[in-house]
Length: 158
Length: 390
Image (cartoon, rainbow over all chains, first blue to last red; front, side, top):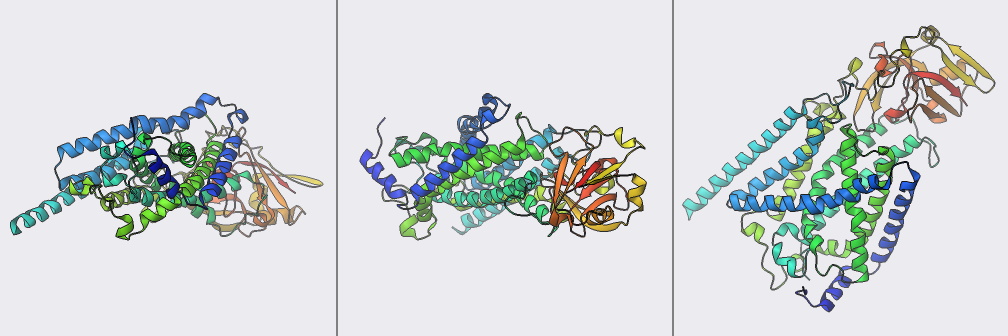
C-alpha cells in the first residue's frame, strides 16, 4: 500500500501542523507526568498482578478500537441504509443521546453494585432509563414531524 | 492544508464531516476543559483524604466547599462520557492512518495517544463503576483513579502541545482557513441527509445535558425528582440522610448495643473516659452541615453535639494542634481521621450525638460521630471510640 500523497509531502505537512515552540515543551512535560503517574501506580507497589492492570487500562482502549468503534460504524451504516434524508439526521441525534444514556445506565439497571445498604442505589433504574429513553423518543418523533412538515411545505412551494 | 483527520488512501472511506479536524478540535477543547476540571477537583479530594496538610491547611469553611467541588467532579465526569465517545468516534480514522508514522514528532504524538485514550476510558469507566458501587477491577479505586488521572492529564498536556496548531487553525471560522481544500469534495454527511457537524455537536451537548440532569439531583436537591438515574437521593436513608456504610456492613451492629461504651479522650499527660450520659450532659451546639461523599452525593443534616473546642477546653487541653479521631470500626482505610487546628477551632466542628432531632441512627454513627464543614464524607468518622488531642 502506498500513500496517495508523497511521503515527503506528508512529512512536511506534519511538521507544519506542530507548533514550533509548544510541541517539544508540552511533549516533554506531558511525558514526564505520564511517567510519574506510571511509576507511582506501578504494579510492583501493589499486590495486584500486572494482568489485572493491563486488562483494565489498555484492555479498555483495545476493546473500544477493535469492538465498540466498528460496531458503532456498522450501526451508522445501517441507519444510513434504512432511513432516508432528511429524517436520518434526526434519528441519528436521537440514537446518540439514547445510546449515551443507556451506556451510562448499564451498571445501575443491572444492579451490579446493590448491597444491603438501602440508601445506596435507591431508585428503580430500569424505570428511570425507560423514562429518559421515552422522552428522547418523543423528542425524536417531534423532530421527525417538524422535518416532515418542513419537507411538505418546501415540496408544495416548489 | 487538508482539514480532515485522515490523510492518505483511507480518506475516502470516511467522508462524513463528523471525522474532520474542526469537529475533533471542538470536542477536544470541550474534553480538555472537563478533564481539567475533573483533575483539579479530584486532586483536592485526594489531598483531603491524604490528611497530611503538606501543601496547605484545609479550612472548615466554607462548609459546603467539598460538597461543591466533589459534586462538580462527578457531574463533570458524567457529562464527559458523550464527549469522549464522540471524540473517539471523530478520530477513529486515525487508528487506520497511513502511513502510520510520518516523522519523529508524529510518532511521539501517536505513542502518547495510548495513555491518553486508555487513561480517559479508564477514568470514566472506573468513575461510573465507583458511583454505581460496582468495582470489578480488583485494585484500590482511590489509588488507581488518582494515578491514572496523572497519566491521563500528562498525556493530555502532550496532546495539547502536539495538536495546538491544528486545533487553533481548525476552530477559526474564517472560510479561507476552515474551508475545503481544493480538489476535496464537500463532506457528504450533510448533503446526504446525515448529521451535520453542528447537529452532531448539538446532539453530543444534549447527551451530556441529559446525563447531567438525570444524575445531578444526588447533590443538587431541586433536581432530585427528575434525576431518575442518580445513584443517591439526598432525602433517602435513615433519618432522611443517605449513608455510605451501614453499621452492619461495618461489623458493628452488636458492638453498638454494649452498655459499657466509653469514649476515651486523651491528651499529653492525661486520659479520661466518658460515658454516653457524660457526653449528653455537656453543652450541646446545633449546626447545619452537609455530608458530602466522594461519590458525588451530598445532603444537609441538622446536627447537635459537642463542639470539639469545648471538649478540648473541658479536659484542660484547649486549642489542640490536631485532633485524631478513631472509630470502633476495624479494617477500614479511614478508621482514623485527623482534624487540623483550624477545623478543630471552628464553632461548628462537632462530635454529633443527634441528627435531625433524634439520637444518631446506628448507620449514622451512634453513639457519636464527627461532623466538620468542608470535609469528605469518609473523614466524618462514625462510631467514635477514641479521641486524641495533640
